[in-house]
Each structure stands twice: as structure tokens, then as C-alpha cells.
Image 1: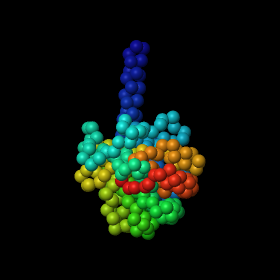
Image 2: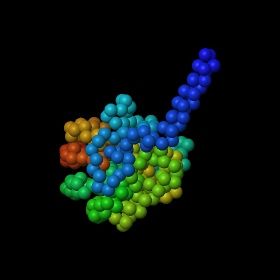
Image 3: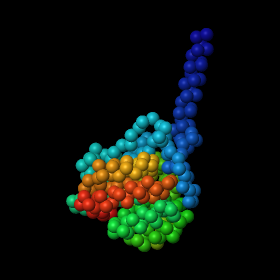
Image 4: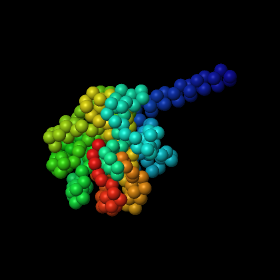
Length: 289
């Protein structure tokens, strides 16, 4: 009987380790969805909670039903919002650290709009920015730019900056180097085809920076772009919650994260209509990274 118990324990241990190995190597096999859908379908405007497994990094987004895990803020230098200036490297990484703030004088802030272009919400955001003569940065997903080239071109023609936000918004931590490179290059090609521009900025989905991603940014001349104010508008917490978060957390140098794609962004548009004039009235002026 003793020998049988030992054998059972060994088998259970080996089986458990095998399952852990499978889980770690391919989280997509375990019901994981990313950003309202791991692979973006052109024009998809899904509306579900976002989940992903793995290490939550800057801006990581747990599902509403997941255990209470809060996204990390940028490195310890936040909330002072020190700027990762050109030439500065993150410890142990192969490229420059992401920008978590801008350095353009007192009361300067930046507005970034992610996950478009969207034929529904991007034009609404553009009209609002034009009304207040604000220049923002749009982090575009390649497959969306390919699906809606006219909308992407409208962003470029309005004078806004465009950042590469990968081809299908995959969590780059889980991908081998070849697929990371493909996610970055295909997005760049699609954005260039739609707008005539080659993005000079790169924003990692979920803020999931890895040494390889930073190295690729350095090799291709891309500035990695993070954020310091995340009102979690993607979760649709309500317009008052989005506005309150931005107003409470914005200060000189802040990079504000908002979204025009990836789902229903009516709350985002409504919140921007309130928060932009409030920020201007508070003496802030909008710049680009």
C-alpha cells in the first residue's frame, strides 16, 4: 500500500506540472480573451469584459469577474511623473524605457486615444478635438486601419500623431519574437498604406512591455509610449467616473489614456466633452509626446 500511495503522488505531481506547463506556454487555450476579443476582426465592436492571463503590467486590465488585482502604476518615479528621456534605458532592458509623461513645460499634458480607428467613434472624437483645437495621439490597431483607411486618413489629415498599436492587439508577452515582430511590422505597413505615414511611436497593448519589444522599438526607431492617467474608460464605468478619475489624477506631464475603438465608446466621447473644457479652464494645454 505504501508503494501504491507513493506512485499515485508521483503521477499526480507529474500531471499537475504538465498542466502548468501547457497553461504557461499557451494561455489562449484556456478561454482567454484579449481586449474584447484576442484577434480583432475588421470592424468588430464587441462589448464584453476583457480578460487575460499572465503578469499584469502597466495598464493591465483584469476582467470584472477576476480576482481583485489592480493594474500597476508606472515605475516608482510616478506620481512625480519623471520623463523617460531619449537615451535613457530601463534597467535590464534592451531599449529605451517607455514614456510615462511628457516634458513640455508647466501644465502641459497629452491626450492619447487607443484601439481605433472606428467608423463610429473616431469621427466624434475628431470633431471634439477640432472644436477645441487640440492635437492628440491616436494609437491605431493595424487591422482596424486596414478595414477603415478613410477614417485613419482623416486622423492624419487633421494633424494628429499616430502610434503603432500592433496588428491585432495581442498581449506581446505571450508571443515568440517572430510573432511580436510581425505584429509590429504589419501594423506599421497597414497604417502607412492608409495614411501615408510611418508611425514614430509604439504603444504595447495592455502596457505589457518586454525586453524584446523595447529592443525592437530601438531597432526600428520607435519611441515606446506609456501612460500615467488611466480612467479605465474601456470598462465603461460611467461618464462621471471617467471625468472624476481624469480630473483627480491629471497634473503637469500627464499622459491620459482614452479609447475610440474596441467596443462601445459612447461614455468616452461623453466624458471627453466634459473633461476637455475643464482641463483647459484649469490652465492645462495639450501637447503630443
